[in-house]
Length: 183
Length: 280
Image (cartoon, rainbow over all chains, first blue to last red; front, side, top):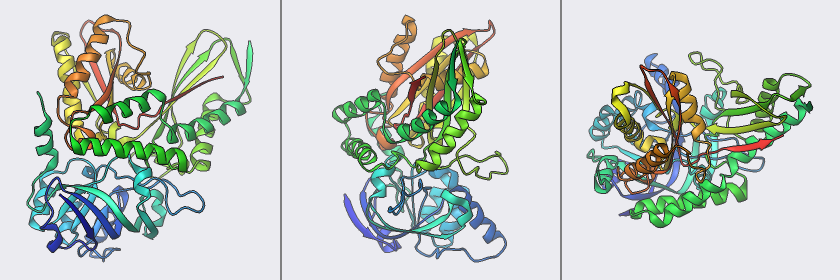
């Protein structure tokens, strides 16, 4: 099934999405990867506010290549989500609703997705040139010193993703492989 | 004795970094195109078509194929009749990487220390493997390596009694564990034999071998064919979302080893298997 969805992605939306569905996302999303997650976690440990509004937030795990002059951004495909598994349950419990990345998640993250009625989307890994065309604005929000790992706010239009883990915990990486396995 | 200036080496390396991150080699392009026709899953086919579109955009608009423009890995063959002038060869290669990654708008993905993790800002240092060969040429192969797939690579120190069945099991285990994380369809580089580090080096170098160049040793060639077929029956598919195209190729290199050992290294590369060679 195909969906066109607009951020913020709320529980009203996530409950209509099922593992294997194809979605086109439009609206504001935030970009953060390894180092930015480390810093956000430290901020929370110190009792500080997060630098982004976390309620119904969508986080894209990505670190772009530099923009050429006159361009908004460089290549901008997903990075491996499992490196953020240590931090994702805490952010989901604080209100984050959706994650975009690629690759497997731990049972702890999947439990947190179900507990919070969230969703984990995959974008096509290694298609960074194609995906960059869906990005209509990009600004650095904080942690500028981290370079490619700074937190960004993007405005995307029809950004193509696939629901991997839905709000009920169904996992496409497990079901799809079974369907095509011949061993 | 032939003389070669380091400035020429630097400029060649710079151009190679930019070229490798925007265009794939002919054999990779061909294998990816062929996969669109043979893939059985509808979603898998859709993803493979997106990869075609991605390569097209990268080429026409000069956007790197993937944002992870990699750590620059070099295999350098230095002819022993060659004399290099104007400074150290290693410095010239690193300077070429620095210029290529900064002037070419490629991502700087290297941190200077594995624990302190401060970005070096210019993607140096490169990883350089030298080989002294006959003649007076300098042959440089660059393979910018992304870490989504690098992180899923493995070494197995098997026992001689594990034999070829143990080798097959090791390769399948590495590919299964890598699954969607390694951005399939992947290219699987394997090194069998040697020592701990020699097997890893062979696995990495195997990724740079053109698909049409097949091993001379019959059992190695057969093993490549068998493993490619088995891997594509795992069901992982494009993007790990199910399908019949999990690997585009399995390239295996072998070497002599110790009576007590059977090292097997599996270096996995994503579908953006970048490599480029220049001879000076």
